[in-house]
Amino acid sequence: MLSRLFSLFLVAVQWPLIFATTSKFVKSADGTMIYADATGNPQNPSLVFVHGFALSGVVFDRLFTNKKLLSSFYLVRYDMRGHGRSDKPASPDAHTSLRYAEDFVAVSRGFSLTDKTVFIGWSLAAAIITDIVANLQPLPIAGAVALSGSPGINADIIPKIASNTLLTLLPQFNGNDNVTLALDARIRFVEALFKDPSQVPFSLKAEYMGQTVVQFPAVSAQVSVRPQDPNKTFAAGDSGALKLQLISGTSDAQVIGQGVVDVFKPHFKDMVVNFLPGGHAIFEDNQDGMVDALTKFATSVTKRHRH
Image (cartoon, rainbow, N blue to C red; front, side):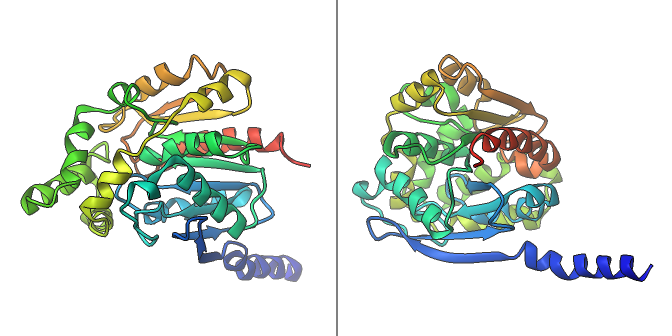
């Protein structure tokens, strides 16, 4: 009896230590400072999460307390350049595909990550999959997950995967001449993240809204239209070099999940596709379903990279 009580005491004491969070700023190759943090056991395979347009890693606060994820993975997240707590350069040169790949490298080095890493890009950040594949060899990840997003973007892909709502809202983040329109766009953008925004607590919507105002219009313009060439991503799928998963909400008001499948499935024959009940922020609307799907995929691909 005493030994069992002692064991329970040790678990209670060690739990906060095992799943402690470490935060830091890392310097990317061009000098841009990138905010990142990591939670959990660094001996576990790593999951690297990046948030969507105009937001920050704060969106994953609730996900990063998920015990199922923490029991099996080391959870890392960072704020994209131009977002959140990271530096916000506004020049086109600071938003090339190479720069976004270099940010991933800086974070990986900052937390001593290995190739037992799965990259998870939500919304716009799913396009970082192409940045990684196009610029980094050998491929430094075991697999990639497009979470309510497209693994690559260009002028041909965007009309197939972006909803009319998204195509209408994005340009309204970029103007300096109409404050009312800019604020209204941010309200509608946040509402469109959820399956049923009327059921989302005001405090959560306010949290999302607050993140959007730290990004100035000149920066919004750069991050939303930056150039990409997804051909190397297609080639990585054709050759089997990249394992890919798409997780999409069936009520996503911003990204057309089936459009993403139509573009990438011909190149990724074994792409794992999960359509789940929920909206664009599927990790908020349906955390359990999203975690189950992600865990199954990430466990499978990281096993192949264990030494």
